Length: 124
Image (cartoon, rainbow, N blue to C red):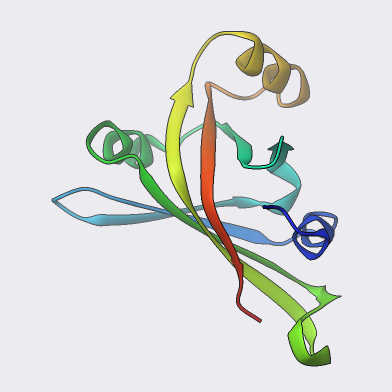
């Protein structure tokens, strides 16, 4: 599911937007490309320090949309820069092996956002 182009985007710093929603509202928060950790073919792990609104949304609706990109990676049709829209299901992990692994890499975390990706579509 994670193409070489997707992996190349993560080698460059850029903003990742994380969109969650419930019946009340839509919420967008951000993190950095360098904070995303790929696991297997369809999981992304993200360190969580805040993200309290996202946590509230996930309690009601596990669906997430992430967008990310990098100007340094060649996009489709030979244009400079590319980006992706990632759809998936999210959950917060507060204990266990995955949490411990991420806590070693990012000691500031209170939780880990695990996204099980259902689609990663290149947009540019």
